[in-house]
Image 1: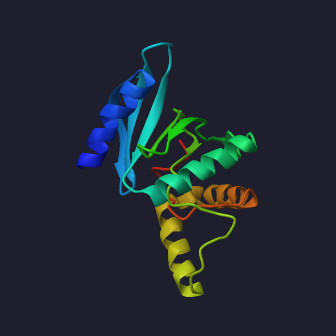
Image 2 (image 1 turned 45 degrees about the vertical axis):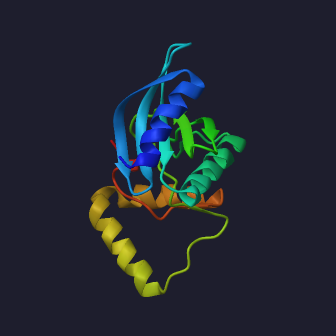
Length: 163
């Protein structure tokens, strides 16, 4: 964990009366940790981001989902935004179980990324190989998200989990 994330992992729980626990995930955009409130029962997840752009994109996606009361996409659970902290680049959300859709740091809002058709063809072939027989379901989820102006490129079995 780099120094900025380490500092945020100390400051965020102190600021919001939480205890951070085990790591749920990590990637190029940051880390996700379990959070337990000192004041009330229940656990959440806190994603600490490495850079502002990814943080801001993900925050705006979760805000849009909250505005539209979208906590499921075709039966797949989507985390609910609990709170965010612009200074610490932190997003706190509910923990969801499969089937789920999560990790919107690489998403774009209102306009899809533009690539040449051969790039899209390679992307689709790679995703179809990754998801196998679940690829049609994943495509339908991506289409539904796009209807809400959310265009997700970072698609993998770890962030769209069927079971």
